[in-house]
Image (cartoon, rainbow, N blue to C red; front, top):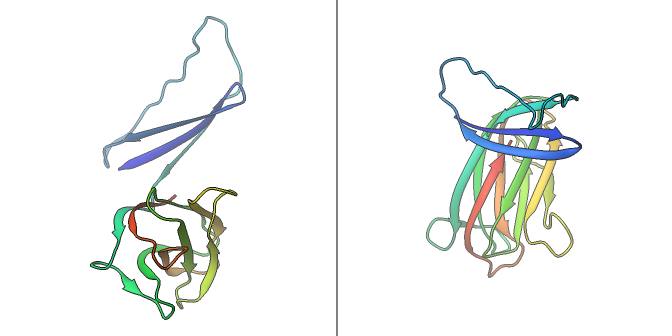
Length: 151
C-alpha cells in the first residue's frame, strides 16, 4: 500500500513516499539531528485513492463531441471527503474534469499555475457515490502519456 507522508520540520514542508505492508502495525521514530533539539512535529499519512499512469492516444481513448481525446478513471467517494487530484504530462497541456455520480461536472482545471501545463484540483466531494475524473488535453491534437493521482 503506497503512503504519502507530509510533515513540517522547522517550518519546512517535508514529503516522504513509501510502500507499507497492508497488514500489521507500524511505528515511526522521530529524532533530532543534534542533542536537546525540541519542537512541534506534525505528521499526516494518506493513501492514494487512485494512481494511474496511462497514454492518451487514438488506440485506448475516446473522443468527445468536440473531437478531444479523453479517458475516464473512476473511484468511490463519500460526501464531504476532501480530495486532491493531480494530472501531470510532459507530452500535452493537461486538462481534468471531476464528474459526480450523475456524470455532471463538479469542477475542472486546465493549468495548475500560469505557464504550467499540469492540472490539479482540491475539492470536498458533494455526495456519496462513484466519481470519475476525465483526463484530456487542452488542445485537440494533444496526446501522450500522463500520471493521474488522487489523494
